[in-house]
Image (spheres, helix red, strand yellow):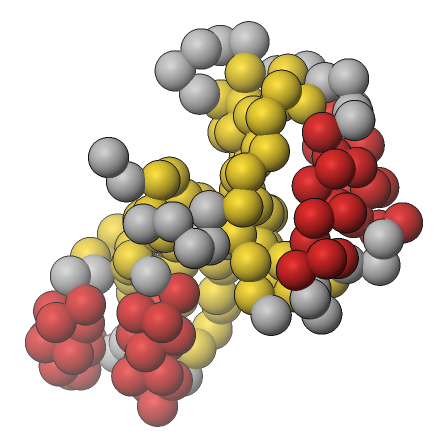
Length: 158
């Protein structure tokens, strides 16, 4: 089952490695991990999307993460009201003749063209995992040249 874990950790080197080691030792598959500085420079927020077999396994992972010295707080926000977002950069084959067609196709996704080259364009799209997947599928027939995704980041609502 897919779960979203948020961890507040010290903003220093080696912390990400120790957190992923805990997950590795428990043989938990990491679907996505995103880390960034918070409103307090000394803290980073990790958003980790994992696949676990049951809630008991997830509880053990959270207990192990909380034992790490650099970890201040770990929460499973999957069941709480929360917002998840992901960013993707998609480079697509785009001869001049079809660029307006591609622009019309990406408009419903609120995606933007962020770079134009002679034979390709780069599109930026942000949103839910499902929205990113849908946008990629719509662009696939034009010929995907490159794709980069950030992974999910999330916060509890309210």
